[in-house]
Amino acid sequence: MTAPPRSTAVEVARRVGLRRLASRGRSWRGLAVALAVIVPLTLFGSIILMTPSPSMLLGGGRSGEDCAQAATATGESATARADVPEDYLALYKKFGEKIGVQWNVLAAIGKRETDHGRSSLPGVRSGTNYAGAAGPMQFLVSTWGGKAKIKIGSGINGYASDGDGDGYGDIYNPADAILGAAKMLKRNGAPDDLRRAIFVYNRATWYVDQVLEIAKRYASTGDIGVPPEADPDCDSAYVETAPDDVVRKILEYALAQRGKPYRWGGTGPDAFDCSGIIYMAYRNAGLTIPRTTFGQWPFGVRVEEGSEQPGDLVFFNAGPGTAKDHPGHVGMVVSEGKMIEARCTLCGPIKVTTYGDRQNIVGFTRPLQNEDVLEQLKRALT
Image (tube, rainbow, N blue to C red; front, side, top):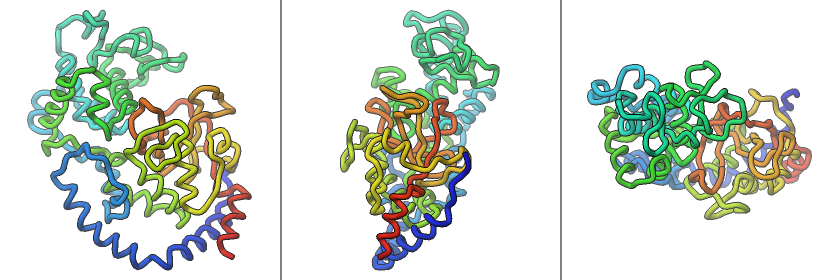
């Protein structure tokens, strides 16, 4: 496949966007200036687990460079350096950044479960404990994938992961186990809904409280910290780098829905499914595209992997009735390697996630290059 041309859609989009925004540009700039002052002040010192509000999206925000560093900006405290083995600390940070979850929360779970692999209790280095858990992060073998060591790519139904590049997911290997734990937290709501994600890891409220307290002690700031995809102050960076004003309006709407729940068939305003949020985001820009994932897949012009840009769609072979040529899940690209998605009822709220490490990507499309959409953009000019 070759990347589709951009010039026609971009030029039409630019003209449409400028015309629509001209009448309200002054008020938007005023609001942006006000929020650039208000938002950082209200965020400073506030609880990290808050749900972002749509109004934050128009704030001054941090620069793209600042946001790119946000995942590692929370350094380790003296407590962490003294308590966490150096190799484990490096793994927590590496996979926390890769998956997009807080490294200190991963480390806190490792501490609470096995004292970072140093515990001599049954199930840490071999076998299982009384509950059937194993390894430094104490996965149930059934949750890991049914066996303690699994060849990656062999139809795994679990969190077995290859963190050291040997081709196997070994429940007793620290790199594999920490990567698997990061994926499990991400799958269940982290980095936004940490209490939910940790509760799924171990279903006890006292456990959640203990993990969060340890995570705070491990951070140099004394806070949990948030990766950029969970930080509403970084949303403006996504919007500012949009290729044109139409894509900018699409992204503004989609990002404003973060924190809302998934609901099958939902098109807002309170909840969305995966294709519903995309359908409504395009409607926010005055464009009509198919409502469902099955309709959206053949609608857009195919785009080669690596050529995708904000506003494009990324499809996955996931969900009932799906196949490699009939994808059942979709997200929308917001920046390189990042998408916003409404994943499933049990997957936590709508959020920005990474898609590069997903193994079931079917392909990318660009709805803005569809002939019907180009006609809609041209009609908007007349």
